Image 1 (spheres, helix red, strand yellow):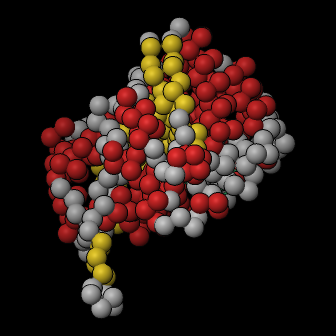
Image 2 (cartoon, rainbow, N blue to C red):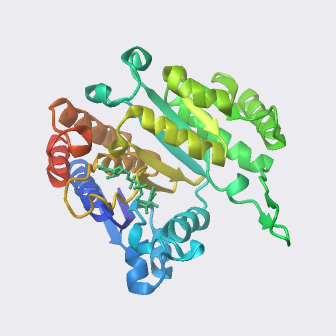
Amino acid sequence: MKKKIAVIAGDGIGPEIVGEAVKVLTKIAGRFGHEFLFDEKLVGGAAYDVFGDCLPEDTLAACQSADAVLLGAVGGPKWDSLPGPQRPEKRALLTLRKELGLFANLRPAKVWSPLRGASPLKDEIVGDGIDLLVVRELTGGVYFGEHTRSEDGLSALDKMPYSTMEIERIARVAFESARQRSNRVTCVDKANVLETSRLWREVVQRVHDDEYAQTELDFMYVDNAAMQLVRAPSRFDVILTENMFGDILSDEASQITGSIGMLPSSSLRADGFGMYEPIHGSAPDIAGKGIANPLATILSAAMMLRHSFRLDAEADAIEAAVGRVLAGGMRTMDLGGNASCMEMGAAVVDAI
Ligand code: NAD
């Protein structure tokens, strides 16, 4: 298989961790007989310093013409004083999501068994392990609704629009994902208060009854879901939710695994095109020291193979290699060890 991957490493630790993920993908290509072409472009503060724009036209065009995008992270103190719309997180991330039509954000939160001790939750709560997937709607709701302020500046309004079409397509992503897992979906909303949530319930129930009746479906208010995530996280398989609730719950879900350097994510379009990135930021405090954990980015590359290229065996090979390296005891600093970013990357390459 021949695929073009836009590689936008970004700022801070971005280039270090993405470099290791590219080595892993290169190893996979060699072992399984594929050809991956890496089209490297600047994004974020790194692009601003050269072009005066955190998302230059050339970078956007490279992402649009690629088969998938691998992103490190953007942002850092150097660019914090830029006006809001020009800041890396807003200009680069939100524009990429919108322009590429990435409406579905998938964030698996899993405790790897060799890392059980990293979870801040008690052993009896972690139980047999935590392994859940948050499916968050990414291009609708209050983040993309109208934001206005009254003329006297004393009141403000944020609109939270959702259409049936937007809910149907993200519901299908959640049900399809559940089929590959334990086949249970929990739709999280605030239907006791919000009209959009009541529409979500109607539409999700209908998509379920018409197309995915074999999948277990339940509904939960978001305040209860936030509580259940720390009380009984193993009750969840797939959490389906709207943009803002998903933003908050996916951060909570990642924290209960205890290792921010381990968690991948993907943002997808209906045709399988996607952008893949670790959930953490650019970690300016450790940038350039060579000690960042590259595993979240390497696992994001595995998600790319699975979701965008349908290369399940190749994705499994990366995940199994990560499992073996951890079982062997190698740890980067965030996991309490002293392996460098390059040593961890090389160990995964060797284990494939
Ligand atoms: P962060 O995720 O960058 O860092 C939080 C803490 O976790 C830091 O102590 C950091 O050293 C550590 N950490 C993060 N990733 C690690 C890794 N792979 N290995 C080892 N340790 C790791 O969050 P922050 O400090 O709040 O944000 C820093 C910058 O990143 C800000 O400019 C923020 O806006 C940006 N950011 C970008 C994205 C993105 O590009 N998607 C996401 C979140 C934050």
